[in-house]
Image (cartoon, rainbow, N blue to C red; front, side, top):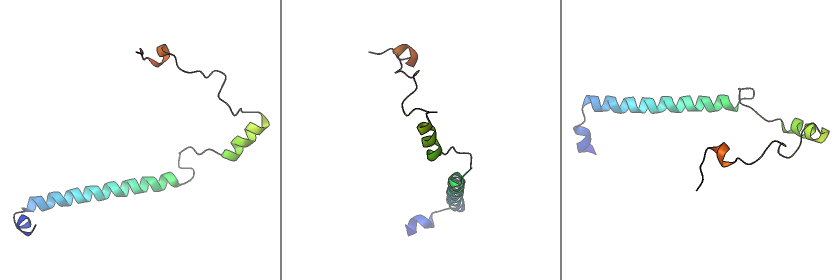
Length: 82
């Protein structure tokens, strides 16, 4: 490793520094994004389970799939099949 380091040029060190700086900035950006996503009211949908259960118990919602739900046919899914 020491002989390899002797043959490094200034541009090699600058390139490695650029890569390290880029990796650091990406890590900081992702960390900030995760921190913001964890905050309540950050724009991500959060299910209020208690309110959902109250609506199911009141009969406003059903705990089964909708009446219009059915498995996709080959024509609907776009697949020709075997």
